[in-house]
Image 1 (cartoon, helix red, strand yellow):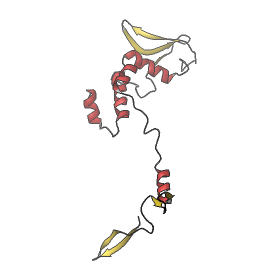
Image 2 (tube, rainbow, N blue to C red):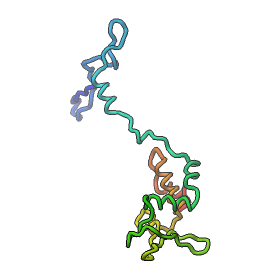
Image 3 (cartoon, rainbow, N blue to C red):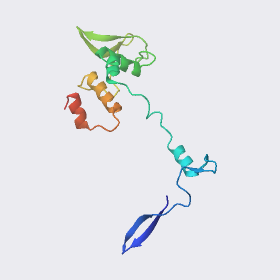
Image 4 (tube, rainbow, N blue to C red):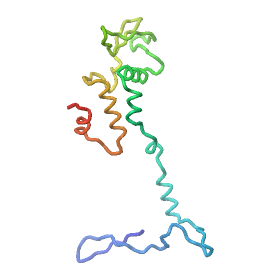
Length: 164
């Protein structure tokens, strides 16, 4: 639809609807009742408004998320796999063997190289570096932010996670 600007009583121009030069239905109907010609503007609009496959992909439900990332070991494993996809590699000497450090029943998020004894944290160099929050809280925050259709304020996210 074309718009035509007009001046009325000294006011700024206001858009005014003008009849289009062609019929508005999306297809012209031939004498035998079949749609024969699609208009160019309809075709262009359909090409411009193609579906975004990322936008319409299936989401992860909360039970599926909790099954996939339900325990601290699963969080650690996910970070380990994302940080070192081909297995551990020491940042100092590039050795491939290491052990996870622990004290009693508490497991640290640290790996120690067998060759140079360099210790590196699973979270060092990531968005989780030097955090005081549990990995469970971070993963749940990421889940809540990515599964919403609209944005989520920081205050609402803090309320839902129980942090300030």
